[in-house]
Image 1 (tube, each protein chain N blue to C red):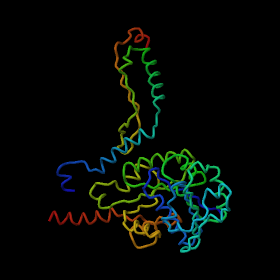
Image 2: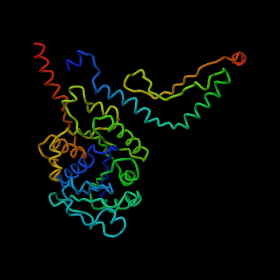
Image 3: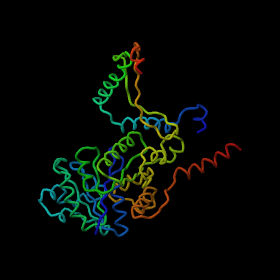
Image 4: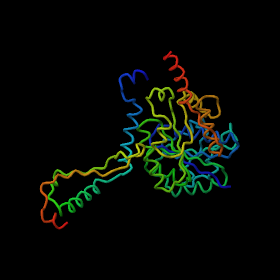
Length: 264
Length: 94
């Protein structure tokens, strides 16, 4: 089995890498794929809480690398979705505990058993980033429509290119259609125009994301706006042609209608 | 929208785009200060063959050049070199 190894990265912190990893991974598992999520943020692990698996951690990525347990022992099976596994990161260590070469080795082992391996990258461009991208073939770059996040995303894209990545896709997170309509937020077209990589998904700003994180259950597949948007991302990863939910246009249509009334 | 148009204010989205475009150009070029210093030295050497220039007040920088098509902005090297005197002899040699 040749698996897809994808790193989810952004440069800037807090733009939604972990949420994206959790939702994309869960969505793929719901389609019947065998998915392994790896939290590579050593010292600041988060993916386990977002997935609601924090109480089941025994071993972690650093234990695997140091040989204190077998890979299988560190993999937590998500009982709610068949074929979904999490490799948690270590909370009490720092990123120097892992090297890119060791990451490649772990991923090589996992490749035999999984359709998808999704790596949640830490913020920043230091060793944690190098570790996370070492074993991946393609990248999902997450950004929000803000200058700071876009600047960091541009830097990350440059670094990924320098590391030989040819397949990079963009997810624009926390888009607020009403602000785009007002001209107070960059639209998805603006962001794609600036960053110049293919768009994989537009996730609207949705309070249900906070609720689902509170509950430790990713919202992909639910009827909430973000749940639908993540479901589309998963479909596109699987090669389906799914049109983008165009929040901006559907609202500008209303704006046009109200505009007519104003004129009358 | 109407208010924005009324005051002819640039939307904050447009401001963000304009700022980012210029910012990313200098980010992408990523020219180190040492390299800029070397470029400056070499330019001085070449220009000095033909004219006397004020090296203390000479400035070089990389910034965005508005291209013919408005969409793409190319990075450009701008040099401001004050001329003190043009050598007559070198001018004839040319």
